[in-house]
Length: 161
Image (cartoon, rainbow, N blue to C red; front, side, top):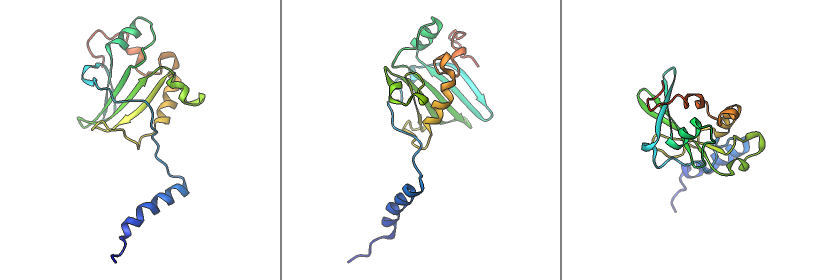
């Protein structure tokens, strides 16, 4: 009989210890998807924070809705492309869907927007905390929960820096 490999026992043991002391993954599954048409989204503004450059993208329909004082349509994606040292570090995606806000307690709602972080390979990054995103964006209820909402009306096809 072969001896049972010690590393085979370590993973389940680590899971039990993590459960007992309260470690947990900070991301949560939700309906937010990575947009299939990211190459067709409009780069309407860039935000720079130290060594981080964030390109903000969305659909032409969302830009038109904001400019016309209309609600942003369901199915819209807003994408923040986070660059570090000239490379994509991660993506932050907001997606709006009919009734999606009802899936959260009142104190976590951001209208019908849901949020997700994605790795450079566009897979979900379960190490990121989406509840933190909701918490920050809640204070922007007067601007569709967007921090760059006020830049959209001035967008004329040339990216606003």
